[in-house]
Length: 153
View (cartoon, rainbow, N blue to C red):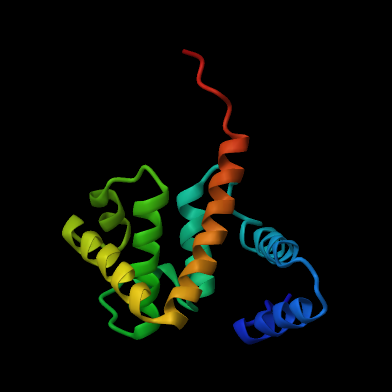
């Protein structure tokens, strides 16, 4: 199955908005579509892996390339966004996040998190792409919370 690219998704959303379809409904349908295809071989409870897999798809890179010393834009951007999302939405320590990305130091994760915030504050296209990732991750977090049984204290 071929995934729609960013331009196709924008066209779909703009066409739907022009026809007065609820944008929340559109976003939910897109997220549901992505969830079905991206999570297909990853356990639903494994939030960290789902985030990384989504970032790899969204930023057109791989975990191997994000873990390497690559300075290619898509690899660096994907790595920084993945680290930002993991630091923000999971209980992973900064050290564990750094280790996941090629044994990087926790200070590199802090730098990535700060860089994502700084670029998002000044670059609209970057901010929009990041916001799409945040929406997806928040849906994963919500789904994960719904599936997690309560603690028996």
